[in-house]
Length: 51
Image (cartoon, rainbow, N blue to C red; front, side, top):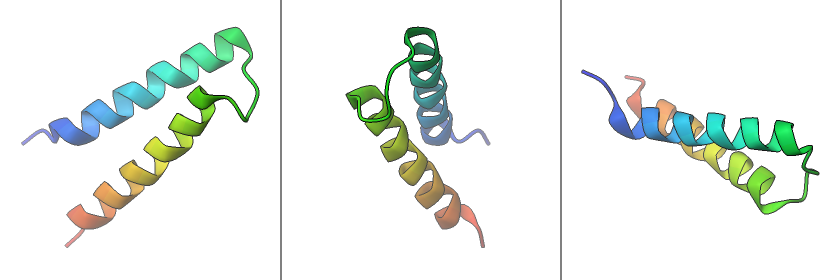
């Protein structure tokens, strides 16, 4: 079964990363900070799924 929550997190991260790359945003911008938050959420979710 597809994990829609994980897919949504990864899609948001991918979209933000593309935006940051196109605009050349610095590390301390809100978009880059959100990417770090998403990395944490993705890692937590994957850790919960492991048996």
